[in-house]
Amino acid sequence: MQKKRLKIGWKILFKKLFITIFIIVSFIGLYFVGFSQSYKLSLEARVKYVMGDYKGARILAKEAFELDPYNKMAFSILAQSKISAKFLDYIEDAKRYLSKIEELSSRGDFSKADKIKIKFYCEIMIEKYKKLSPTVMTDKELYKASTKEYEKFVKIYEELF
Image (cartoon, rainbow, N blue to C red; front, top):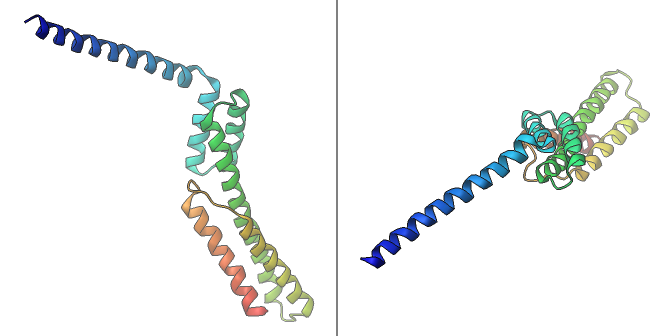
């Protein structure tokens, strides 16, 4: 009878201890998320990143990381938003160069100098694509769009040269 009460007593004590530790850990977590400016900024940066505003996410993550260099979320968002911004820049450059190529090729008098310009544009964009390095967290649609632009330049390059 005494041993049975002792076993029940340990179970109740363990339950109370577990609940107490859980409550303390929860309050510590809420303190960091609720009261730390760095964690607020990193959460806001994460939302911006998910919404596709990579430049805005980078600015907020950088600010959060400067406030607390141990904020891993801010660091990862900062690194990932830099990579995604490079992909966006590549897509924008590709559109700009493709419009220049279209303009050069639409003229009736297609000279050797125009052909060299197009070759130069293609080489720049092909090399720039090779320097891009996606990660697991890189937006798949962003990666597909950049790959599609890259393939356009490869096709133009192969057809002309």
